[in-house]
Image (cartoon, rainbow, N blue to C red):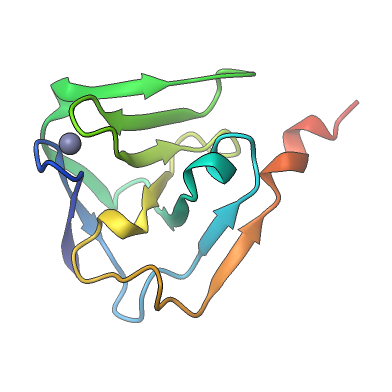
Length: 123
Ligand SMILES: [Zn+2]
């Protein structure tokens, strides 16, 4: 079903498609960025995320390999979504930004071992 994803101030808004039974893959991540934010990531497919408004006020943050794209609202500072390094086509969303989702009630939150990223293991 279609749901609204918004930052805190509401200047950024996207439409996301959430499966009836909830997002299949939900996780926290222990990478240097996510552990600081306490970001709970929901993984969505490449066609499940559409910006409705506020693309111009988004800021892009990149670090290390600069492969992943982390977006946040330049007004309220909320990290709304990201494009992961492992697959730049898909979306990671901040589940706390989605209407009707209470991240404190999710039962299936896993751990993404971003600290030991698979793309860093190939020597
Ligand atoms: Zn905002």
